[in-house]
Length: 469
Ligand SMILES: Cc1cc2nc3c(=O)[nH]c(=O)nc-3n(C[C@H](O)[C@H](O)[C@H](O)COP(=O)(O)OP(=O)(O)OC[C@H]3O[C@@H](n4cnc5c(N)ncnc54)[C@H](O)[C@@H]3O)c2cc1C
Image (cartoon, rainbow, N blue to C red; front, side, top):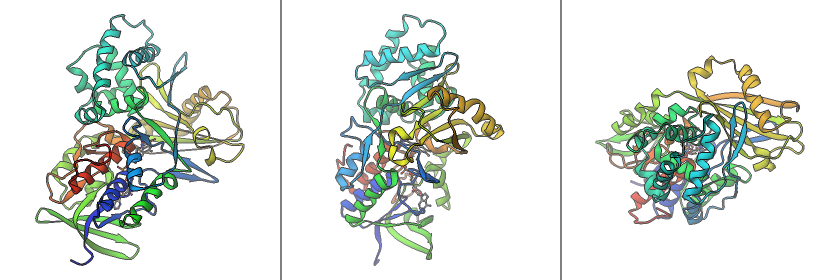
């Protein structure tokens, strides 16, 4: 059929860009369809008045040849611009609040000792002496396993399932559920224990605590600094990107994906292809099918019962209170829960806020129903602003403009331990899935999403090796 594509990639988040880029480089006629006006997907930023709030610092597993999307950028010729950001710190919020650094610790004894220090700040009692050898053994297992293997093997296990067969020590649960609550953006330590993926928790810990990864500050922001260079590279390789093209349906005939039904400013059309690769986030995937494939139904069953929300408090200060620290995870000393995180954007991306002002934002994590019951002004005044003042002394007394809003935060489902959608659909022929809720996924968050795009391209191109896989 004239004009028929070999591949249609639905979505231009980092997974779609990496996947589409490699398929185009492999010489295949590839079309990327994006419902939004820009590429980049969830890597969005918010223009607010004269400044821009950049809500992501993409993760990069720097121990793996620089990380998946960085390797893809090199392979595809995408001229991305970014620099490493500082290691995050943990602010323990309690009677004797304190800041804990996360230095790059390379050795297993070093990580063991750091984790004991972390745990001791959460516990009023002195930790038992026999905890160290037990923790050493657990860290040894976690840190010595090859990263790609570990990310995959433990991806669909919860922390509880992973540790249950190894120990019943309550200190171990307290430590790992608390670290996971902040590093997997779950908020509640209890929820993390039951629900967070052990594999993804360990990837995040290995990235930050064991020095195997980093987050990067895009220059000037995610779209212009990273996503658009990928898009230009794809077009240079012969791929085609159509923005403002919403895929309404993946067309399935006789058990095979044959194309998509699309609406765009020009109306509705059907575009045929040999294969369809869906990278829409898990929340949007089921809408694309007349009959939702069984594998997707299974993956969505659990997340649909978990209602998390993320709230954002953006503060633009009329003067600078402090240029330190960069990204701070805030943990409740009593419970080990993660309250949220603070990002001093003026420190990491100073070019995005106006001279003489300081831009700091904070996210707050909670149960969606709980947060709906709260008086948000009260939450900001009594809880969030006082935390910000402890991290940045002088914050409360500085004139500022503030905006607080919340959104559903089912955004980090890729970090949960439940069933993931398999890259090559077991239900429908010629249908593939990439994105952070799919498997195989060899890392986490942005770099994990990039790895899924690579993995799918590799399957389609029939290559033994692509990038770092
Ligand atoms: C608030 C927030 C903060 C985060 N912070 C970080 C961070 O600091 N570091 C980090 O590494 N990761 C972070 N993440 C996670 C990271 O954003 C994701 O892991 C990553 O962007 C996922 O990429 P993706 O390609 O899988 O999906 P997406 O980026 O969601 O891409 C999917 C694309 O598909 C498009 N699409 C969907 N449906 C259709 C349709 N029907 N037709 C056409 N197009 C469609 C969407 O518009 C989108 O462009 C954060 C996520 C959120 C929400």
